[in-house]
Length: 92
Image (cartoon, rainbow, N blue to C red; front, side, top):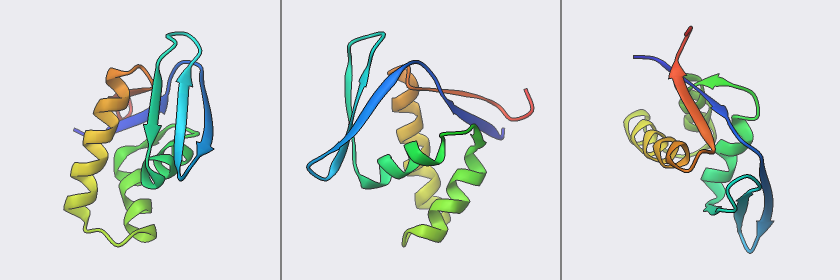
């Protein structure tokens, strides 16, 4: 099923030592994202479909469609568990 991802909650972020560090002002939790994770966070500044997100990443990084999708799905599921993003069926 096609999914749309959108940021959720109030998160502060800053680049620190080659990674993005994020803090939830609501939960008081911290996350660290690699350069690719940080790029994903930038790309979802506005809601977009996971398919669209993966298509953009495949253009920017040397990665196959299948590997990109698996890695993006894993990261988005982790971010959703932390309350940083919401995943909803596209069109719903």
